[in-house]
Image 1 (tube, one colour):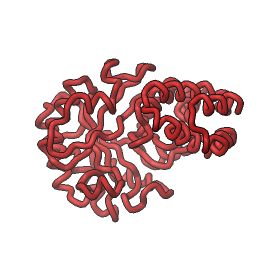
Image 2 (cartoon, one colour):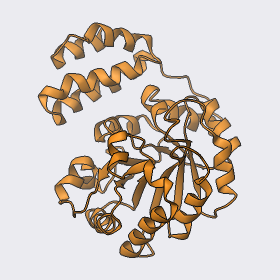
Image 3 (spheres, one colour):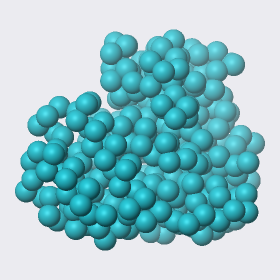
Length: 316
């Protein structure tokens, strides 16, 4: 059966949200927020902070594997940190060539590297040499920085350098997150490489998922914002795949997960950031669930977790 992978999303898909979403079901693999690498070997505490699942066999409490993602442009430093990630327990390493953030691109990380395919390939090859041939190495890229002209060259370079699989976010950096996602470009890339290519971009519904697989030809799909906005999306897809359509979760069904999320925020997030973290998810959930939108609007000025918790409880 094809895999559904939770996308790495900086400042959003942290271990707390990974825990909540994988408990609902349907997700087969998570990739961490990127760990930024400059020129140094990072201490273990950095890896454990962004991937506390390392203490649990690098799996979420629901038992779903988590793969560490690295971002940077220094091949030797990325290689050294890839080795450390594996020593700490990550089941493979993912390299980020897709982040569109201006601050990241200014420091020669993420999607800006796609303007230099040879540099991308050199990074992948250096990491592969350091970790050995038997360790799983994946990469994530966009279709390009400003244009798609180098998409196939980048993909072939990543393959030739030793990556086991490639995820393609079917937009350029300049296109950001604006629809559409150009799934047909993933099909073009698949025609030029032999490694598995995972499709990513604009999957919001089970129908989008089916269309993405059909157009791209990819077996596996990575989903980001669609799972954050509609947490039962992967579960709905799974039920359809086995021919047992399930009733979509309404807000009442989701409330226990939101309350669990609040409990985790209270346990793991600094007090001064707790209310913002909860409001962030409520705002995003509000795009699908009207009750979440009401909670966000009514909770804007609330500061304590008990107030926000009570607001969610009474929203059912």
